[in-house]
Amino acid sequence: MLTKRIIPCLDVKGGRVVKGVKFRAHRDAGDPVELAAFYNNEGADELVFYDITASSEERGIMREVVERTANSVFIPLTVGGGLRTVEDIQRMLESGADKVSVNTAAVLDPTFISRGADRFGSQCIVLGMDARRVPGADPLRWEVFTHTGADGGRPASLDAIEWAVRAVELGAGEIVVNSIDADGTKSGYDVELLRAISEAVTVPVVASGGAGTPEDLYQALVAGKADAVLAASIFHYGEHSIHDVKEYLNRKNIPVRI
Image 1 (tube, one colour):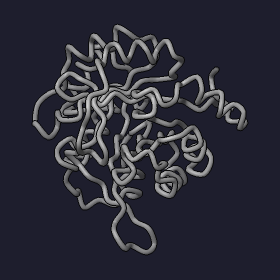
Image 2: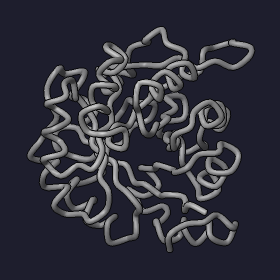
Image 3: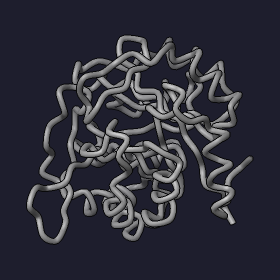
């Protein structure tokens, strides 16, 4: 049985790791290189680095910070933020990333996914999806948002489930599903959203947005059917350690790398 992955997330703004609530009111959480090295030693299975304002500021990702972060870890590193071209992807892979996460550029031009997958392989291309519940929708529906580093993002008029399926058809090898509604609230992941996407696609799904306790991670993996869980606040501010989370999941019979 494949082990479930525990992945700390570094949201980087102005060269510092930050964490907000629903993509707003960011507060400082430390130096990305130092945190990356810490999580590497703590037993994280992977690491995600997002330059969260690159797309909204219409600039490239901070390559020098990515390089220093990659040099400090020996676990798989996914990098996202402001990637617009196949050449951007290549630069990130050359800087030490193992995978790249695409969001805004992929929504604006879905062939970006297929061009990246054709060039580097689907295993390198991660769809980063930021989704919000459609108020009052029955049955439940979620809308995709882009440019989420700036004041909550922009609605893309895309159904999240349909976009997930389409992205996999285009070549995405993994999907990080981030709930805007739950982001930074520490009230638990959007399990319904996770389950809907997990059941609709054939690639690994990573839960993101809302982790507050080890039980939240457990619910994302079991009820949400996620293959991995991404978390930030609970790790950055010392509320829970990666070791404690893995021990908790192990006691609940979830296969994890101890």
